[in-house]
Image (cartoon, rainbow, N blue to C red; front, side):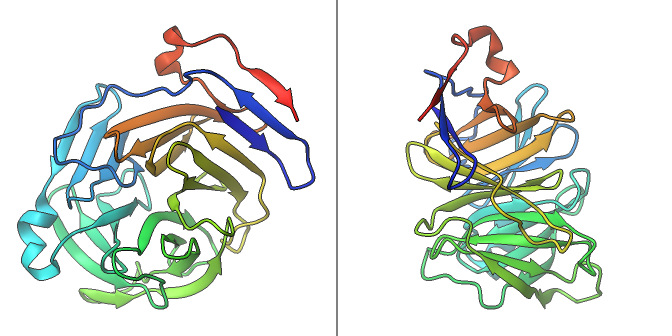
Length: 295
């Protein structure tokens, strides 16, 4: 089931489609626990695992490569890697920005050749307590930033999204601190902000409700901050811990959800106004066209 809610005063439309979830044929390693996602290089997804590894998924053949360098090289220095968010400033970059829930920090990790942590960025004023901390992460490009963009960081403790500028272009040494720009609350009363992702001028925020997910979409303004809610949906993916979005044509996006408990990746096609639809990967198995019901 997916639903479309344009605003608090608009009619609510429910787009219902039995069994509409499209699961990709991806098999993760036994210890892989998908906890986030970003669009990666050469038609891939990069997915962090709660166990501290990074999973590179080839979307051409659905093979998975596991990078264990963080645990292999840095466990003594950093302790347990509870990875809960991931971002790239460019899908073809050799650098990943990996969020640690248990440290309230973002690691700048070179994944291609050195497999090395270059910098650790602290997040001043970020809200966390025990194992309830960072739950989602994305990078939003903006000319308002001296460093080309802001990092949006979701807190599972409160549901707030903290917007930071990290000194990416400065010579900082191995440790540096981000600058807090703003604190944003996309959805009051819900702290499970499990996914944040940016694509083509829009920020997508996903709230994990267990058996389904509440996806909210906001335009990004010229100052790099979110505008008013444009559309919101309910999507049938169980325990979605991450989300990645990419635009495929002038009106269409692909939306990938990673499920922790399911050890799976689900994908939809998305368009404004018509919402989440059957993805072409599963089109041969698609049910009858959904009915649009006005309530």
